[in-house]
Length: 428
Image (cartoon, rainbow, N blue to C red; front, top):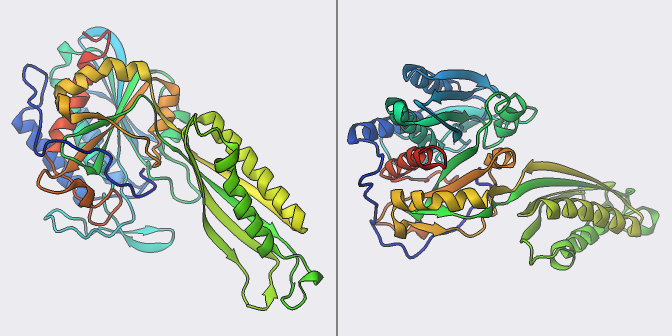
C-alpha cells in the first residue's frame, strides 16, 4: 500500500539496460508469456480488499495443478501454497498481494478494467492501480518454475497470496496482520520472507533495496476538541474549541521539530481534516481534527503517540476546552533484515544487473509486509516498471488512474523470486 504520492526514487540508470540471466535459473519465453497473460487477466478483473474471490480461485487452482499443498480462505480470501523440495533445507516464504483499488482506470491498454464495485457505500471503478496484478502473476510464474524444478529445490517454499494489503473495508479486518493471527506461521515458520513491489516512477528493471527501515509506519489520529457553544459576539460566555484546536495544531508541530531526535530517524505528523462550526457568528461546541503520523523507528513511534496526546490535552486545557485523542495504529515500519539483504544482494545484482540495483531512500509510504518482517527476517524491494523511452519522473505514480507498467519487468521479478529461493544460505 503506497499511502502517499511519491516522486521517482531511482535516478541515473542507463535507459533500456536489462540484465541477461546467463547461467542462472530463469523462466523460459513460454513461461514469461504465461505470466503476462495472467497479469492481463487479473488486471481486467480487479477485486477490492477482502473481495478477491476470483483472483484467489485462480491462484488456488494454479497451485493445485502444480501439485502443491494448498490452503485457502486465510484472512477471508488468502491463499497459501507449500512446495516441498527434493532436498532438505530452509523454509522460504514468497509473498504477493492481490487486492485492487477504488480507482476508475483511465489508461488505453486493451485489457483495461471496466469493473464497477462498491466502496464505503458508493459505486466506484476498480483498478489495479498499484500493480498488485503484476505481483500475483510474478509469484504464479515463480511457483510454476520451482514446482517443475522441485528436485533441485532444497527445503520448503511457501507461496503467500495475501488479500487486503490496501486495507480492509470499514468494520472488517484483513491483510497480513490477520493472516498471521489466523496461524499463517503457526505450523511452518519461514527462515526468511521476500516481497517485491512494482514502482511506476522507477526505470524498467531497476531494483531498489535498503537495509533496515525502508517504508514508514502509517498511523492515524483523531482529536475531538470539546468546548461550550456561545454567540460569537460574546466568546467569554462559552469555551471556544476553534481557538483550542488552533493551539493544538501549532503545538503538535513542535513534536517533530523540537522533541524528536531526528538524527535517529525522520518523522512526519500532519493534519488532514479540520471540521467545526456551522455559522459565522456561532462558536461551536466541538471541533474535529484528524491526521497522519509517519516514522521509521518503532520506539519513536510510541514516543510520538504519547507526546501527541499530551500536547493536545494540555493545549486544550489552557483554553478551558477538553481534547479527546484517539490513535488508530496502522502498519508498522517495514524493516529489511540487514543480514538477509547483505546475503542476497549478490543474487539480486546477478539477476537484475549490477547497474540496475540501487539503494533506495526512505519511503514515507507504508506496506503491511511489515508484519511479516517483524515475525521473521524479511527482504522487500522495489521493481521499476517505467518504460525505457519515458522519463520516469513524468510517469503516473502508483494509485493513479493512469498507472502503467512495462510488462518486461515481470520477467525480472519472477526470476528474482526463483533465485532468492535457490541462493538462500542452506538451500544450495
